Image 1 (tube, helix red, strand yellow):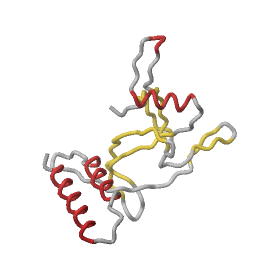
Image 2 (cartoon, rainbow, N blue to C red):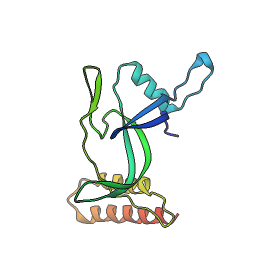
Image 3 (cartoon, one colour):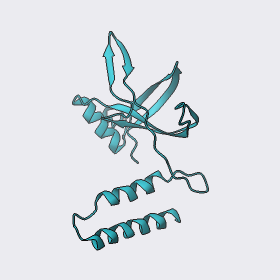
Image 4 (tube, rainbow, N blue to C red):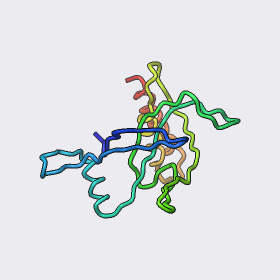
Length: 154
């Protein structure tokens, strides 16, 4: 539903990955119906917006070495501020000024990643009432936790 592009190929080049893809936008000339997000991405691109790719993956990170094992790619997102940093052009070559990110994910007993449910819970806590009355804040936290735990059982 939120797809904006499709990766056609993904190849490893030394320690980098090179992706080739297509924006899933509408094209009246050929009768192609794009996705809503693909049409938005195409429009932003046509107006000069720069965007990049950001990956989401699961894996085990060795705290001492930073080495990742059991890597499982979950998604490649089109974003205006990629987590890997900015693509910088120099003499026709491209390189990434990157950073290492780490995020822990919750999985259920079937191995399904419950990121979306956790993100909904996390976002509900960001919208805490601006009040000095502790009971109002506690009520909001309790309701958010209750909704989160209920979503895990569905």
